[in-house]
Amino acid sequence: MCKTCGCHGGDIQKQVLTVEGMSCNHCKNAVEKAVRGLPGVLAATVDLGAKTLTVEYDAGKSTLGSIKEAVDEAGYQVV
Image (cartoon, rainbow, N blue to C red):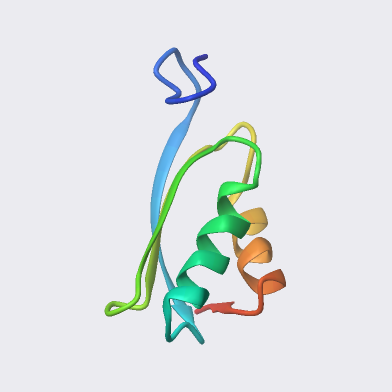
């Protein structure tokens, strides 16, 4: 599988999660950085207005649980 985009296989998942506690660009950057640091995460984008995190990841390398844990460790909460 391509390490950049996952185009050569893998179980690519896309999830939209509601995240509480984000209010500024610092919050946005902290959540995105925490999630992008996980293995298999291809994209992580926060929408501050909607209070959501959209994440695309290879389910063979990361889990939804590990993504939620990374958000929690960054100081925010997936609801």
